[in-house]
Length: 313
Image (cartoon, rainbow, N blue to C red; front, side, top):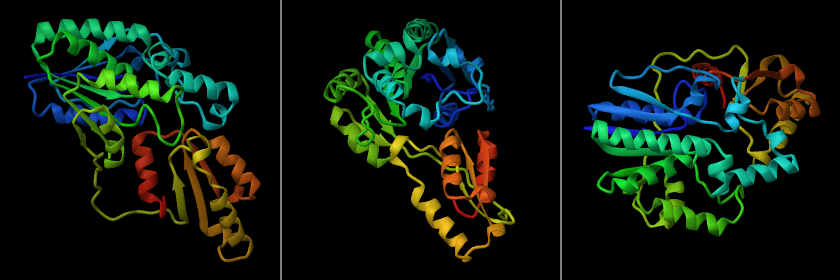
């Protein structure tokens, strides 16, 4: 039995979006004779973090010309939140996420879709594919699977969601009702929809397909935990525009330090991620420069090591 996985985000691209796809492909390799991963040829030019692949996993690249290619090989291909909050970029970001504009302006783009569909159809005939699995985002991956499934109705297709296309909180798209209608149309060919949590599962059930929650796994590290000498608080995530505000945390930390409840030499706050500009602003606002360490972008292993050594995260 052979499987076809459709993942724009796949190693060696350096991104948190890669990990779920990567570990699923490793798991599938234990149950299928051959696993074919269809991904973007951008993976050779975006920021890199290679991960080992099983011998029976074959990676195929679809030609791509999208905005990620313009960005090229940078430390990160993601914009910091303070830039996203500019009115024009906020509007363009929402338009880019809105279907069907997403297929033209978003990750992947039309060339990726056409190229991947062509490769996928040839692969199904040549390698006798028995199973299709695609991931969101971008939605191009699901659209590719939807198109391939149209000519191969006998093949089971599982559509996975790390996030939601229509966010209930962030208001991330235009024409929300139209988005739901398009998603319902595209997912009608999926045999199963999977997602990372029961919370997201409830939102995906409105599309009328079977939905299963498959949570993200964690890798347990045995042995004694070696922590920093100073009491260390770390944060390695993003801010997501105005939905995460650290003002209260930093104001209270500054108050405790100023009143002598905590010695400045005994504590540090470490940030790693794309929003260092906003964190630096807060740090300066509350006079915490001597307690702040900005690590910028880290590899996955460096991030895990930082989290393991911190007292609070």
